[in-house]
Image (cartoon, rainbow over the protein chains, first blue to last red):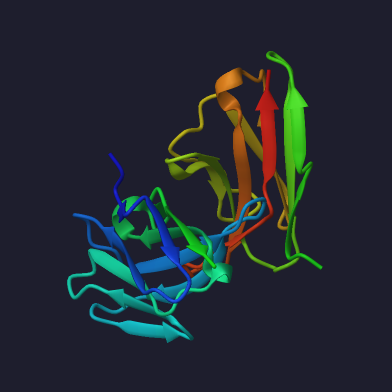
Length: 112
Length: 112
């Protein structure tokens, strides 16, 4: 059982559509991060959220940390083929020695 | 130039062989990590080190060992490789007190 559950596992959409990826847990995290990984490369950090209820925007990407700091979402507006990749959420918690716990990831494919 | 480098990028070996994967970083971070990535499982922590004299086991350390030769170098060894160690291996670094991790490009290891 994953400590961080990501959904959906796979998403295939057309260019221009909107989408949301979810990351849920029963544990409380002091911070939560989102990474994007392309084939043949390592994950690249997109954002870190640390405050319950926090919303961060990065161009067409909007990240939200739940009020109770147990869940997060990533919303992409008007997806583009360049958004294709594996999106990973990761949480840090004193309960886990402040090491990162990763979700299994969401594979996003944006078709042109 | 990449901040976190890994060698080799690809390796095919046979069951029972000893393998070493190397990681170097120029970010000046104290903390270094080794992860394994399998499809559908996200990233699993093998070992981590918070400074040169510190080595800690992660979730899946059995069959692996590490050496922190210097602040900038952290190597992972498979003493006697087995086929179920076929996976992508990533090295990562972070600064003390900061949750964000920075990943290398990965090593694809195949054990026949």
